Amino acid sequence: MLDLINKQIRRVPTWTVYILGILPAAWVIFTGLQAVDPVRGIEWGLGLWAVRLLIATLFISPLRWIGLNLLKFRRQLGLVAFAYVVLHFTAWLTIDMGLRWSQILPDLYKRWYIIIGMSALLLLIPLAVTSNNASIRKLGAKTWNRLHKLAYLATGLAMVHFLMIGKVYTVEVLTYAAILVLLLGVRIYRNGAQSLLPV
Ligand code: HEM
Image (cartoon, rainbow, N blue to C red):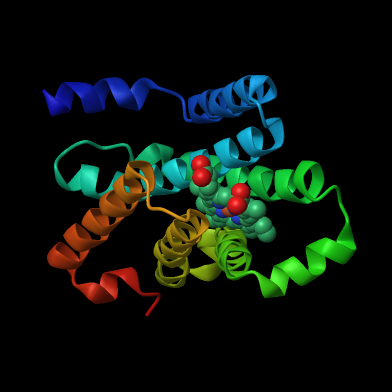
């Protein structure tokens, strides 16, 4: 059965991920504009999809362990996740803060959840920049793999950022946190804790 699914998946072009990746953003903007608070609706929606897509990218390896091979889409999925992080950040800068730099700059070092979110974003930049074959050749597969393990730290920080925002922990945020803990736990159980570290 999985063989059949893998065979069908091999036929799907990787650019499909980019096309599908546009849909949540379109939905977030469409529903956000009709919300009572469109700024929050759009900013939160993009952040939420960033979390979902970051976690989905980390799911590709464990799925392969059980025989489902989606590896050919991992790069595209990771890049789409990064695009959502950038869009979420851009929404904060523009529609939320109105590019008021006198307010933005203090927020960047005074508010802990912003500092943590910003750290996650900064960690993802080298991963996005090196998500191409030329970088794998230049860095060598070993170094490249080590660098890309930063995805675990970045997603962990993104989760902490998400947890810090709510005054109460909703079922939603706890569900994402539980999925991430489970995902990392399975990886540590199978490959050891060093498999999460860029060593
Ligand atoms: C990997 C990076 C990031 C991810 C995955 C992420 C994700 C999220 C999520 C899921 C939410 C809450 C949405 C909800 O409650 O439904 C959120 C809220 C928010 N994020 Fe991020 N975020 C990231 C980085 C950033 C950065 C870099 C900034 C700004 C510098 C930022 C600013 C905010 C703000 C202002 C809120 C709303 C807080 C509030 O309404 O009280 N985030 N983010």
